[in-house]
Image 1 (cartoon, rainbow, N blue to C red):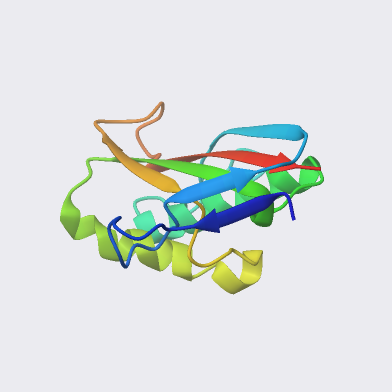
Image 2: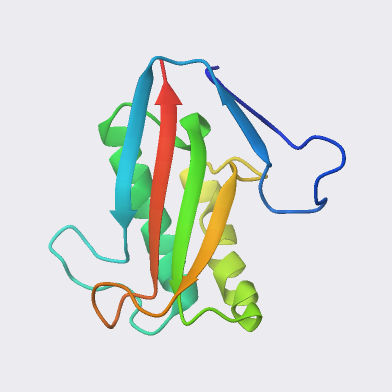
Length: 136
């Protein structure tokens, strides 16, 4: 496997992601920000952070598959969430948890960041997800 993930002692425990990913593959895969839209552009889960997180992950999975990769090859996830407050962590995590089995997401997740932003490119977009993967 080209990616090994772990959390060294001394870093914040009990996070839903590993703190470090070491990759040895030769193909770098960069997935642009994925949002909660179907292939024809139809919005998914308007106003629903949980549903939008799940769909952004599904779209990221499709993008990875298009590059002959999967979430097992991911070394970095970056989530951008509009109007972030700590109270949104429940619905955010529920979106991830709702697709763990469907998408065969590694658990804990690869190293990840969640960045609160004022807004994204369209008013109905609540979350955008970028991924970086390394594959053979």
